[in-house]
Image (cartoon, rainbow, N blue to C red; front, side, top):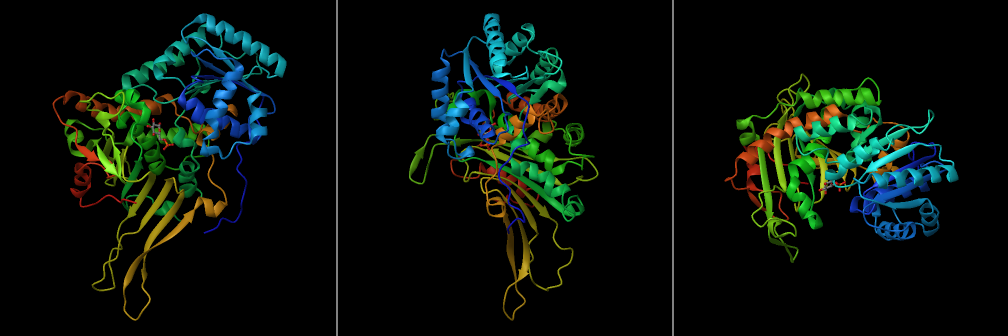
Length: 506
Ligand code: BG6
């Protein structure tokens, strides 16, 4: 299937001059995602004609060594394609670095001097974006120091100050509320951009376009026609070098509370009045608030956790989660979660949404599968007709497919299941863009539609909190184990089998 028009990758237009201060600039996320995304924006003229990026972290480094460190790291990043050396050099001349302790007021005095000098020499006009890409433990220090240094207020009446805060935003409802309260004591809500990079993915935004930009899907998108929905976010990698962090998180906090609930809410949301920050976020909040909360019994019935054990995949010996560096050898942290979610509203009453995510699963894929109800009456006597499925492949083979029954060629009336596929790469002649670039660009243009508001972050935590409570109270319970390269523990299949259904394993 080909698209009618082929456009080149673009972001949301030219922006005003600005300075980005990237906290945690020597960390993995900054080097692998945020800085390459900014390079991509610069190459597409979407960071404005004049800009500066000031890295801020504890590691002492000169501007020059910061430029070469992030330059080396950016080379292997496929999301933005091959780096053009000349364009990189041009971009790197706008990179600067300030070392400092996040809690040290003196470091912010130095930062103010650096900002003033760059703003004057590059005529940046005072627009400032603070990007928190540090471990969450230091968010409070940075936010408070920014406030005390007077950096949360615009430098002049024509300029803006915004702050991007990375996930995890809190580690449960209480800490998320505390963080919201603290950040709202320093910044106004309209300055705060809580980022979930899944919302920057083209294919995730396409959920809204598919549903609300076409006339043929939405009439079917409800309890009258949909049997159930499955949302899978599966990874083949293990926890890699992040064992220490993962021990404090687990799949429920790391993936379900954020990315998977975002996918759930965009799949189920009501049409917003318009595509703007308030309208879209109001509707998303409503659907999160309609998800039936779990009680003790609900967690036991509808939520499954798991942990991968050592195994051999394609001749390679892979460690189990408990053998990963930084992980407690008797850890109970879950690397897999599957759950059944019910949305108590008119559109979805009685339609289960099955969600699952995990590390070291059989295939890297994020997809949403809508299974429709079967034809109410099959006129072809004695023939089995499968239910229709609409599958949205979010990554890595971005596309959409629809399956339906068709008559097999021949004299017999025989029915086969066939699939109609749309591939982003083939349809638009190019791959999708970097999610981080899209979101940073939205932020510098002041568009918060694809960022989270305080109320919806808290609503998402309210849903996972009871599960965390049950698990932490069940100290003696064992965590079901699963083999690396599988689709998770047996209990995950049982969850659907009890409802007479099974997982759609791509
Ligand atoms: C991050 C999680 O938010 O998302 C990681 O902390 C996970 O554990 C990652 O691997 C997945 O993102 P993506 O874009 O690769 O699907």
